[in-house]
Length: 193
Image 1 (cartoon, one colour):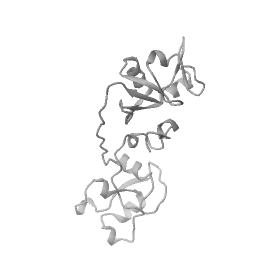
Image 2: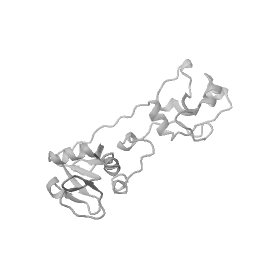
Image 3: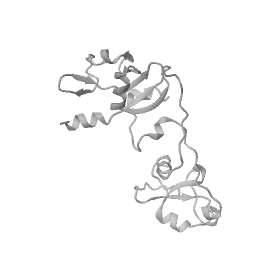
Image 4: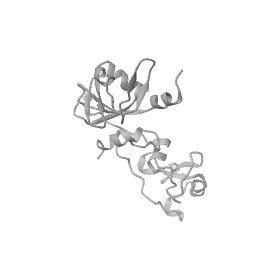
């Protein structure tokens, strides 16, 4: 049976780089170990940026690394892996879903500036759908349910409301798909300058 430390380590995210060290995705630790074992990727020691095949990786002793405990050995936990052969850069697309609108706006009402809970947040269409508005990034904002109900199907100019920021299409990158509030590991920051 796994202890809580092992369970939390297994939930770690691993940054994946193509062979040119360009960020291409984020993986679960389990998936990263599969890529290391199949020799499709190598582990990077984020303390010195050394590159290791799996057989070398499991014998590393570095007090700055986290370790996964198994019945027979301690296995260092990689934060970054690099693919051995993959050199493509995937095209990222981000849908303007309810969850993604909230994430873009950081759960802040775009009319009042108040921080909202998931339950109290709603999506408001700046140009109401009943008047030809769409579900796109530039027409949807996070709003409190009170303000959304007051605005109803009026144009913004027909109300006393003002947006604190115009809605925008977020930058397409792999970090947007991470859970809201995800804290970027220090070791990843060099790849997202």
